Length: 289
Length: 215
Image 1 (cartoon, rainbow over the protein chains, first blue to last red):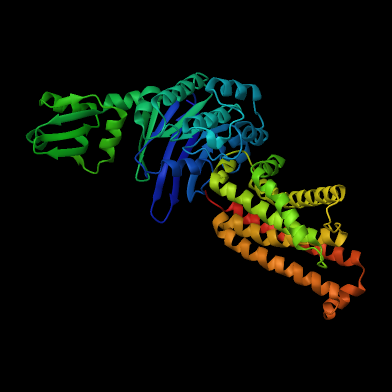
Image 2: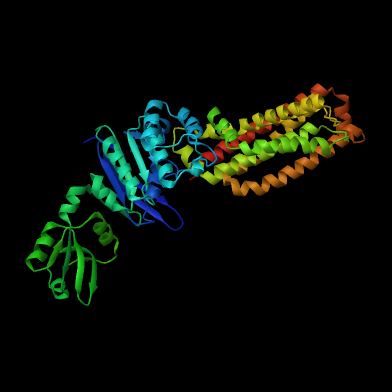
């Protein structure tokens, strides 16, 4: 499987946060969800990919090319949508587009006009008069109108109503039907990824916890609930995010054997959602009995 | 790159309205004074427009957007430097239109014509002011550069007025005597060349600072 993005041993240190030697890759033709709690390093990673931050060490390759040496070529093939639009509030949609279009080698005006129509964006309205949903849609229209092969999105759906979120997800799903394209989608609204993601990369406290196909992730994990006695008598088991109370315990099983053991011992087994997995992984208590 | 300059002008539609205000106020305020009104107007307009454009960049956080696009950082810097000349030309056009209108209507305000010296002084002053401002802006961002630009503006404003008075009174020392002996063209040419060299150094510094900026 050819990779559209490869990150190897990437590090970046700030006064109060460090991205620690992270590595992962994105295969072509898929939507990869990038999850993690606030402050875990999602935006830092994206800013490093976009060369908005300078890496301390490591390697970032986009389309097989170094992201700094071939910056212009790489960025011509990337569309981005951030949590804020960064457009000039005083300009109209039309004026903003006129400013941006010449920057891209393969700007497709017809494509842009079709998205404008599809999203119902008023071309003569000033950016400051657009709703947050409209601004994100405008960002998306720009991102999709220059034949980008990789779409990088940083929390694009936060603060949007379910209808707009659903519309955006539908567009991503349609986009990915072209097997040469890829989407890297950072979010903490994991229900969006439950719907459309193929792969999940999870980051916590500057470290990558896993980079796995979503179906495999959901299949291998399970939420366990049972009595404390059950937990105390457990054998060689792989659990994370254990929460104990006077009524019993709740934890995430990280493999099928552990789940089977607990099921045989009478624990309640629930299928996890991505949110469950994220929450259990980011809780501090782990147990490898 | 010209799309960036055009954008700087488009986001300042309101500031362009103030342009007329400056032209009218300064033309009236400097009536009868022995100096080039245009130079003062050009410096003020350029100061205002450069600052407003940078303020809008800061407000939008647009560095993040441009630097996520296939946009060379050198071009971003260069567009800001070139915009200074465009603003000076805009100021000159506004001043000329105002002069023509005053003549046509017959209002008894004397609008001094734009002289070569006045035009050169305007270019040199704006180059000097922005040549200092831009490296600070590209290194530290708008908020840090704002205070410095205000101080610079007032120093330059006072400087232009004193220099004009000194040069015209011809009472000054050796420097002005030398200037008075040389032809106007020689002095202007030498000063423009010095200003352009200064701007080039400023541009190189700005590019260096901006290339190292993180967003």
